[in-house]
Image (cartoon, rainbow, N blue to C red; front, side, top):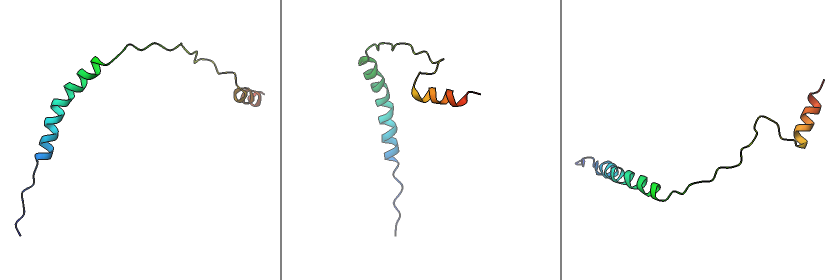
Length: 62
């Protein structure tokens, strides 16, 4: 039996496609973006007043 040589064309084709597609993807993203609105700021320093937090604080008291 004669072995056929390995074909590296798949990897080469992928690298060629990646080199061409990457700048195209960046350009498409830049053209299709809109400015997003900022969300309202959330005060993360305080616990939210829920039944769960009240139960925890009540059980943690000495």
